[in-house]
Image 1 (cartoon, one colour):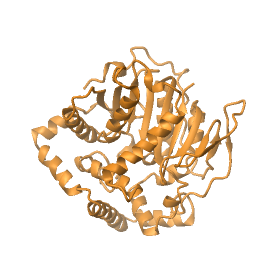
Image 2: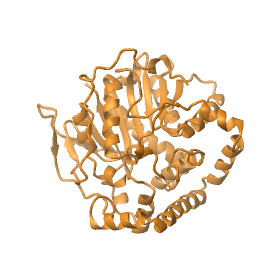
Image 3: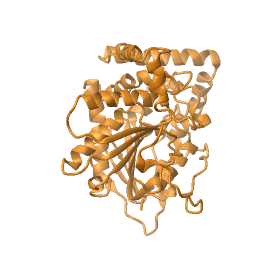
Length: 396
């Protein structure tokens, strides 16, 4: 499988002395969230305050509300970790988490079982169709890091299997519905992504989206829901007078990408409107192989909480390498300071943590500091929903 032309590896070797510094794994000691240079702290409704810009690109620390008690290194977190890592209890917890998720989704109108059945019918087990769909997107040279091969989201093989790929769409819709309970799943999904894109447009350099040849990567794209949503919003902002952007969805799971390509083909067949150039690439976010300074927007939605600290740091360095000067790095993910998350009932918190192996690291990681240490400037943080925040930063 070949990557799009602009994303093919540079024929020139990268000078390691010029490569952005990759940060090592963070200490497990809890760190306070930084209030960094040009960091805007805002509410989901839009009010914000901006810190003065110091003369030097540094970060300062201010008080941070406590992370949820069931994360980190405190006694409650240690007790929860002991429970979910006790083998007999671990299996029960994963089964329970999965059962709760599916039953709750179907009660809210999400046709989880029917959607999975439809994909199983389209790509039958042990069929040539399934084999071809997978081989068409698989990069046989990719070597998975150990953090990616652990059980995840109650799936024994993590993301490296068909079932999580077939269930990705209803699971995403169920997550959106939990955020906006009074909306339909589709409206909740649209609202959540719209709020993120509004913050991106608010804080990114003016006109970033209007470049004649715009290159965008959606990192950790899963089955392409975030990719297609991003394409639609960028196309609307650009208008018909500009050429469609080139958008690449990146994921480490070829199973997700096989489903993403199927969904993309179905979406393309339903419209005669101008289309963006969309491709899906099987690659690691921390080692894309893309040329230096070839990308205008690096978007990463609901990915960081699934990563250990060292991977987050390495991915941030890779984003810095491939972004052009003035390019935008945008993250949307859970907010550890969210009152909703901090006050989850113990049973629900334990169920959630049993399927998310890197929760402790994510909730204690100072992402603003990672961005600054990597070299990004104008780092801004805002709430996007009562449960989520975004980081918008620029490469100088």
